Length: 310
Image 1 (tube, rainbow, N blue to C red):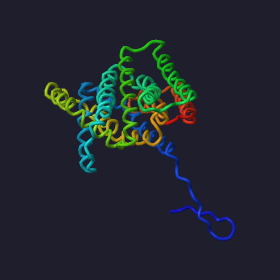
Image 2 (cartoon, helix red, strand yellow):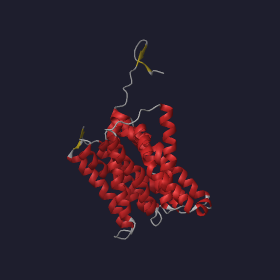
Image 3 (cartoon, rainbow, N blue to C red):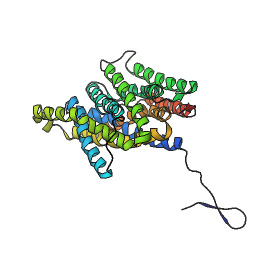
């Protein structure tokens, strides 16, 4: 229905300006981030009863089955030879690398601690976007990205008493791989479509993920079958939402608003993950967590106003 306003005699149609691509992209990106913010808490649930490697490989296989159904339903064309290297980067970074490393880390790290480390992901994504996507963030943009990243890293150090946990390097490596996959996938989404990018990246993971999952099922069948329902709940979430549906919103958002700019929305993910860890895992939420969340949101708002040339 078209809005109308009464101004003088008679009704006059009032035009409503459509949201800009940057605004649409930011909104879609935030929905993706909200979905991703539950990944670490649900991963911790999953690895509490299942082997971390099985969780990482199995979620790729489950999501790839969904992707094959979706691609067939949409009659999506096969990727071109020129698109394959970028799709493989998404596969290595987002489908295999990040899930595998975070699954291993979540065996020993609290989800809340892992969440704040993942907070440096926007800066890493912007770096890859600048190097590979020919985006040129302004100095002010870099300052806001650096400030946000320093904020989350400082919070992580404060939480652990000034040091790092033994599993922290795995999380940092996971962040680097995810940033590569986000930047490459966001760039390709501008011409291929975000749904097809994650769909084909999942399909490309099958030659590795499917045999690994089958071998682990055969080796650990009894322990896998005996896993509690909570572990399967976590596994189901990361397979369907974290590995598949979330990327529909995320890559579409980056295609509309730009990788570097929309990537800044991910600065809000640590705060959302902290709340999720409290609700799902009953981890303690302190006042400093709340203050940290508001500080991150402020940095995101400032970063969104900075210039990014495309």
